[in-house]
Length: 141
Ligand code: IDP
Ligand code: MG
Image 1 (cartoon, helix red, strand yellow):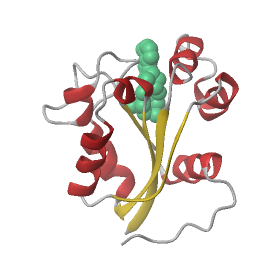
Image 2 (cartoon, protein in one colour):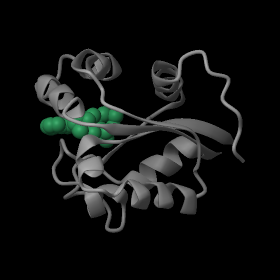
Image 3 (cartoon, helix red, strand yellow):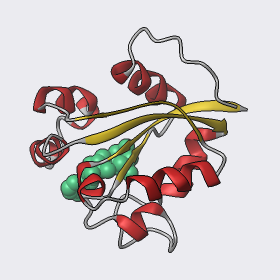
Image 4 (cartoon, protein in one colour):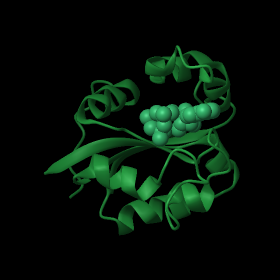
């Protein structure tokens, strides 16, 4: 099934200048960017995005990190895009991520782990609407 998912190239990966490499990996995996913008998330925007984690002990640190510099926010479209992108990203902790995954290659720590990817159709719908509200996104496939 063709799906859409939200990806974020996080501030650590933008600082490392690996935006091009990460986008290349999406495209090689058949995940087509259909909307994309570079933006610096404010702390409140990062808090709203990660609201599901608001009770977690790392919430303040995480949202401070996510608002520490520019990110690239991308809607990816492709076959089973949500799971395909999770597989491409690897585990949350780069040290536990499969070799060759984006987080294994570019992630620095469990927090500064290079990329975000939606984890379900419900979160994908919420996250795409959060960053691209009211947009009638055209298919790139
Ligand atoms: P995910 O990004 O693999 O879906 P989540 O559990 O949804 O992982 O956590 C969201 C983000 O919060 C992670 O990508 C990472 O940046 C950060 N994070 C997760 N666990 C920890 C932790 O134990 N300490 C610090 N930051 C964490
Ligand atoms: Mg998650």
